[in-house]
Image (cartoon, rainbow, N blue to C red):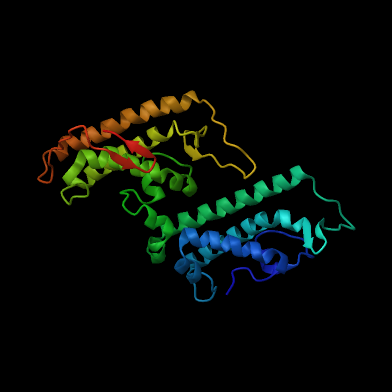
Amino acid sequence: MKYISTTEELNQFVQTEGDLEFFRIEPYLTRAERELKKIIGTELFEKLQDPENLTAEEKEARNFVCEFISSKGISLSLNTLNVKVGSVGVRRQNTSTSEKAEWYEIKDLNRDLLTMSLESLNDLLVLFDSNSDQFPLWEKSPYRQRHKDLIIQRLDEFEEYFSLNGSYTTFQALKPFLKDAQIKYIQSSLNECFKSTDLTEKLKQNINAALVNYTIASVCDSGIFKLENNGAIMKIELMPWEKLETVSDVRLERLKLARTELADFYLNSAMDEIVKLPCYVKNEIDGSDILFMDSGLFLP
């Protein structure tokens, strides 16, 4: 069963003209479906396909899926809908009663469609995280499996210590930096106590706080995140036709220094207690070890 099978169903989520022939848009909806499967996994994708016998949370998730497929599918189809490919070559579509949209109008539309698809995807993934007991298949998804060794797995866990404006796409983009910080600072300091049952909830909170702040400090120089006016870090979202331009932001440098200082405070507070635990073994570093990280090499 398809999520979107007719133009009428498509128009429940994105408005199109009544003369849109569904067969022309269908291949692009299929491409959007494939993209979503790579994120949430085939099992969960298929679980939500049939609207019958779904819980309230599952119906909400299905609605977000339909919103994503519709907006992303139309975005992917824009260029093709403007032309016909035939035996005599590529021609523009005939317009007898309306004028062709200008190139900048098409770009504006594409930006809106991509923004809508990102918002729907973000709402979907936040819903999964917030109701993990209702969506057990979410744990098997490619998004969750790729970084399953992280001690911070959910957006809400991260936002206990730093705001991402509720953006799951930003959280996902931060995961390689989160992994690097976990290896470089947390695992190397805690050694045998890492994930030990000896750790109290208070110690775990301090460790998580340190990890989040080290992560934020490390991304300030990356050029792929921006600092919002409310102090939240957000991923820079570029349209396919745009180029990333690094902009100097003194606020990011200040943020880096402040968050590094805060991270050190949390980790030192935790280590004052961890060194007293039975699991702790002093880490001996001879200066020759090389740590391989998601963002490159780190020489301790």
